[in-house]
Image 1: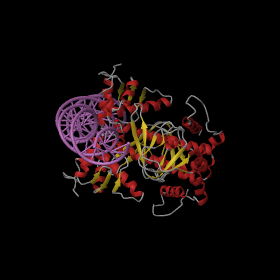
Image 2: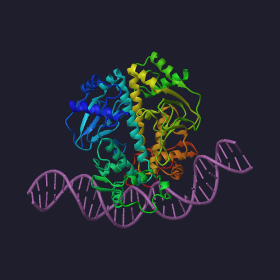
Image 3: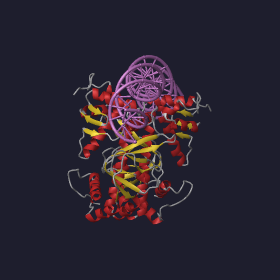
Length: 259
Length: 259
DNA sequence: CGCAATATTGACCACTCTCAATGAGGGTGG
DNA sequence: CCACCCTCATTGAGAGTGGTCAATATTGCG
């Protein structure tokens, strides 16, 4: 039970805008009593494995899920039966918020790697937040965070060139790993090339080719799912250079810098 | 004051999954007393006009905004100074939920046409929802709805071909107009071609050409911003046909059906 | 009436998709 | 321990979509 309790504090801590990861804090006036109540609500399960589902599209809303370690992808099954990836979730992130509106899950959530995930029965949580204003505020902030994540996805996926999309994707992951105290430049991708391409609206071959090209250009090193970013600055420039800028830019006379 | 009060009821009504637009209902046990309290919180302003801002990126969170009539676009200013459209909002929809996480607006909201918009000071609303569990639930559902909208955007923008993107965009608008009791097949676009292309991640010329082509194929009639959908079914097929399906499909031997 | 903003159309070419074949790991069974 | 299979990833060649550039409507507004 302890680990989940700790996770929740961790979770709250991360979502507090006044606290960074290096500070121990229980923000928003959440005292031990409230944390204990939360602790009583939360269900801990044994580790889930690659391919396990947290929930499927159409299931009735039961719980929200907080990822303690590991990662999850959410997918939406389209009318034609094809699956589209709509999001990737890492530790401390909450999955299932889409289900509240219609009282049923709109997408499916599939575990990408062995993960520890806490389950919070929504109706219990809602009852608790109704009694603890500070917790209600946390909940609003969490949902707002989800809205911001998705806005970020929209920006990423709406980029014009495949190059920009993949660079943005890698930097997004990088930043999220960094926030978790992990390396911002050396990490494993828990999702397949297929998932990445599907998410970004590209062909899988394009993603593969781009990885190769980025490597040739010295921007990163990649071996299967292990990625090392070597030139973050240049990746950032790729992302921020709107397509119309790219060819007028004086930043790169011709060749991107080799490391 | 009355109009705003009515709008809120309208608003709540729309967000209630058990009620459709033709029923008068005050769901979730929200009695007149609560509605009155809401009414006291809500600020009504005189009509806003094309180009007015509800808020700008970086402004401190003051209020959430509910569109009574008209429409709004939200834009995100990227690192390179370029503006990207991240969403379009129609009547009964709420804008500003992205600001709760960091206590400041992440994107800017710009009015697209003369609009009536209600302002709800967030802190007052939060206080009220803390005291009225049914209203708290409404708030959760509203935020969840926003998450679903954005998920929809991700699916739309992530489609592979420009054709699929624009068809999905038009059908999305159509469905939302229909929900509001307006024509699902005959409507005005309050956003420019530029906004549409920017939102969908396409070149403005591509959008323009597609409108022309759709018209030539008898799928719709378009004159500047006035759109009449003539063959919704075929538009739906375009959307649902993943690119990989499109060329094997026996649905269209060669030419799309002419109306 | 003319300027500015918005939208359409054409020509050309680059990017990215599709199709196809090959390569690399991980797991299972002989 | 190796052969085999299956999945995942890479690479190549050709074709098509969609982007860029440029010119031309069309509309709105002062």
